[in-house]
Image 1 (cartoon, one colour):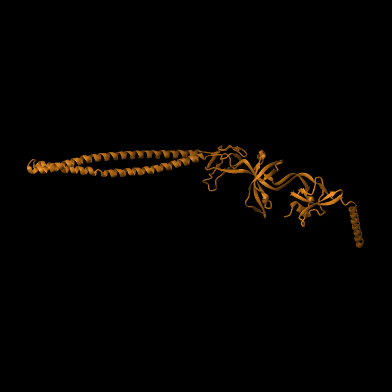
Image 2 (tube, rainbow, N blue to C red):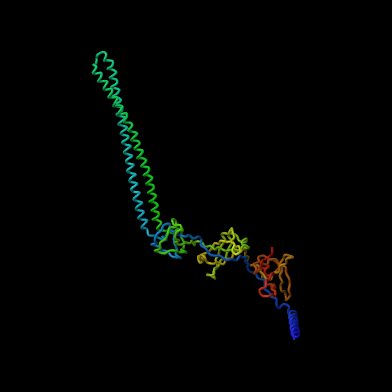
Length: 435
């Protein structure tokens, strides 16, 4: 019974193949698919994905600590440079400012008093020096006169012109004049004492001057801390993130070990960029100023123009896949539609030709032996092979430089194979001419 069933199945298979072969012989072109050559455009591009980023972002923190009493902006609000972003309660800083100002006033007053003391001491020294020198001159003259009279008396005494008492009186006056001169001369030592006192006063003045500088620095620091209770926008931008609310107490970004409290992020959207991840196999085809077409899922009917402005110098290896970051500037008035962190679909244009003869890439046959392309055409119901020369080939269509004309029927090189099986010939055609 099994043998009979096997023979019946074998007979059925043979009959099927005989019938299918006969049908092919009667109509050999029934399974052939063709497509006409046409005039059109052909585009070579590198497709990849990316994310939208702003020109740059500024994370705002406060130099001061305290309670927020004003916070007028929210996410998506536009901010102009020097707009008041946030204000902290200034009570403590205002009190510190008054104390610092009082210290400056006190030390400045002390410095003025010290300068006045030094001025008076110098004037007193000058007067003392002048009076002492004048007195020395007078006493010196008196001493010289007394000495001269004694010498004259010594000559007259033997002649009895003067008496002994008169001579002794002259000697006494000489001694007294000499003593007076010596006393006056000793007064010059007071100059040194007075000068030493002035030097001490000047030293105290220098200390006060340094103290004035110190208190003025403290005053300026206190003024700056008071100024820091008001945070002004450093740039024109959009609030893209907000971390605090009115009434919240925040910590300083300078004095706090943890880096302080984040307040908000301002983004400069005057320029919009896309950071695209380009596969390492394609990065060699990318160059600066290359034109780019960008789209986003949020705007399915819109396309944005762009250009390559930066190519990453180092690749990123993720799960053994190496990509390079390419920075693309978005151009045109509609660039504001794109928001930071949107996902972008990027096509980097390599080359494009318009109004050229094109053929479906599935029609191309490449010979490794001759290293040339051929196609099969259908001419009056008969298959003919033609050698052609191609230009640009994007895997979908190829530019025909020589060998074909417009509106010719070319046979697509499709083969019958199991679903999902690879097609080496089609893959080779899509990759273009082998190197």
